Length: 413
Image (cartoon, rainbow, N blue to C red):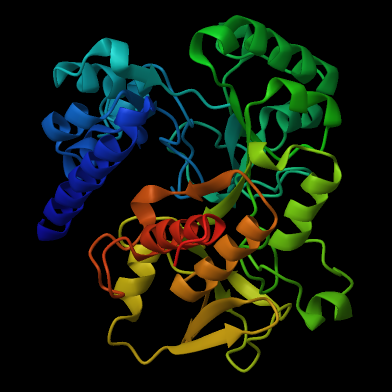
């Protein structure tokens, strides 16, 4: 329990710092927060965090998925009789999550209830057993566009006609809005701009679409320049390489799946650089090696790496978990001087991530390209305990490098 106390305390201190830094400038402080009661109790000092947050974005989704070994819906509004039969009661549902936050005397006006536009998928163990809590063989097949096993965007669900079994809100229940094609997305962004831009001054959208006509409606473009590789591949690859490796060219990928190419391509589309926030991850993608003698990029893997103690997802570790996992271990650290990123190997585990050194190089690259800012995914997976040196070492590296460049720009040392 000491770990969770430290987590709660440090999260409060982080929000306090953000509040003191940004609220005087007229900016809002918001956070994405858990939607399950057990996670809420473990992770947050609710009375304290609500002092500093202007909005609470509840993640009332991802209640079930391939991280379970049984069938479950991503975002059930109410409990099923099967929940009670299997001892889950009404814990992992939207209604309970929202009601619990309200019971903690949080101002309802501060709460934004989260809804997903994607589904969680499963591969059935037995096609005659398709009920909630029936065992599964694993995650569903990856989508053509999102490329993640166990998950499909709603557009992919519409294309694939719900095969394999897909857990997603049905439009017949008035709980989903379908985007028929890209023209509809253009219309949607236009409508959002007309409705909200004057009142709230900002429209944001996490983008991966290279569609020129959308730019005029967006105040900021948060580029997801990470997740280039992961357990959704069947080979070793780094989550967020800054530059290409010679092995990328050898294997026919060239410089496609790297940060530099992604950012440069957006800039080539005549997007105002000041609108762009280049994304950086505070987590790593992990693999279980097929052969411990074959640890190079593009070598085949047995599957995702082991799940972390706190994030609980196979194939992914928060930076705080990476620091804790490797503290005092006999793991081996490697620096890829071509890609400008590190990775670690411990027995059959291969972990690609960003550390202080690689993060600084990415910030320098972004500033040199004149982008408006940096987007972080996510604040809570940085090393908030200071195991790797200083508390919030990645966030502080971002802050310090940006301040350095600002001083250089203004002629100060």
